[in-house]
Amino acid sequence: MPQKITLGHKKLVEDAEREIETIPAAEALKLHGREDVVLVDIRDPREQERDGKVPGAFHCTRGMLEFWIDPDSPYHKPIFAEDKKFVFFCAGGMRSALAAHTAHKMGLKPVAHMAKGFKGWKDAGGPTEPGGKK
View 1 (cartoon, rainbow, N blue to C red):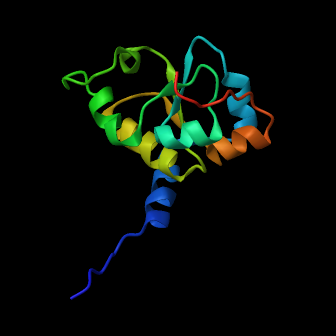
View 2: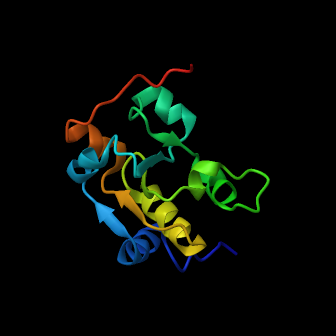
View 3: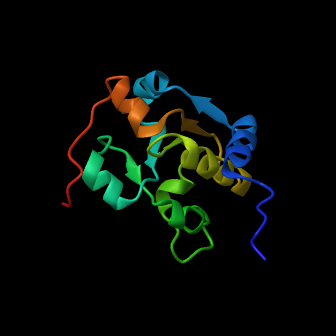
């Protein structure tokens, strides 16, 4: 018998966006480089290599997010313990909504996600850098 999915990705994203702040890329541009803000790129490394990066953004793949946020995890990253605003982004804005929602539920505050993701960033004239391996 085939699986019957009762809650699809669109509904999950809609629900997440009701509970977290969604900011347009133009607003994220104004936050870029501020000491009290961390832009968190949750795209896969292959996406970064192919499409480029936001200079100064912190990279955390979606699959490691919960482990890097949790201070009790052996994988915890100290950046997530800092008193800053965390703005998540992905390629188009859906994964980052889910990531910001999860981070918020875990207790990370304040969090937001960037509407339209890296594509929106580029369309708004945001700076980028090549994403090749360093």
